[in-house]
Length: 303
Ligand SMILES: C[S@@+](CC[C@H](N)C(=O)[O-])C[C@H]1O[C@@H](n2cnc3c(N)ncnc32)[C@H](O)[C@@H]1O
Image (cartoon, rainbow, N blue to C red; front, side, top):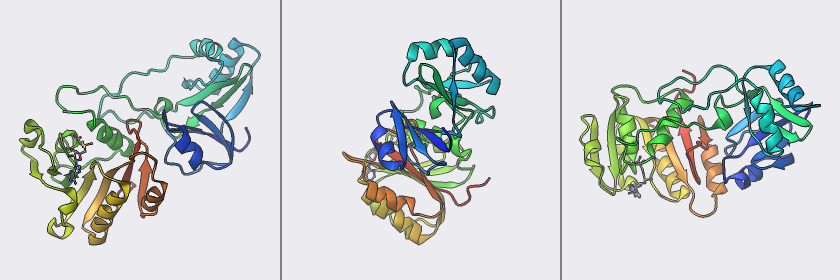
């Protein structure tokens, strides 16, 4: 295990992670072991840092050794499932309760472990995500938001520990039926919401929302003035989104961006690479992203 790192792929995106990682030495299920320190990845949902291999003589011994390292452990089972579950049952309970939106990120370290062989645990007491398997499962609002798309912004704002501030100006492109606009408006920011379709009337009627029917690509940044955030969840080819983003970047009057890059068919690695090259930005595969990723650019990453 010396000098290796483990990477967990999101469900269904093992291929993308495998393609992205170099020096893979082993792989089971969604878990990949790669030689060397942490690689910058888009497709890892969680990364296990400085993992160790722990030979165990029994179920009790496995639990004892994990407990001796720290309290909180999350099992990601890829093999030897029954035996792994028996070890897990002997460990302190870790809550997998749904998260209330707005709750701060957990501060207690959460380690991840797996029973790689019947007598070998692989464990990492530190991971890049404080959430079990890097997944954020919220207590959902099924009444107010028209679709589940709002969960993307809930997750993004939680991970960034950042969201628009009261009074800031936000543009939400491809906003219908209105989930993102609803989330942004709830921050107290002012939302200019644009879509070819019609917005859900109760969202369009929120006092700090202005909805306008039209194409996201027809908007000229020169007519928009200064804006604090540009959001886009428009369904379009990644290349088309890149061209749109380039125009807004060139104009230089938008401070922060959060855009969904949606893949249609194959993953468009070439355009993804172009987004990666944009300074001060990063690409995240949110746990609620399907075959899409979220590109974020912030004026200041440090709070
Ligand atoms: C996935 S939905 C957005 C969901 C939205 N974020 C929400 O939370 O409700 C994608 C939207 O992109 C819109 N769209 C597609 N092409 C567009 C274009 N050229 N200009 C503006 N909107 C467009 C569609 O009408 C659709 O409403």
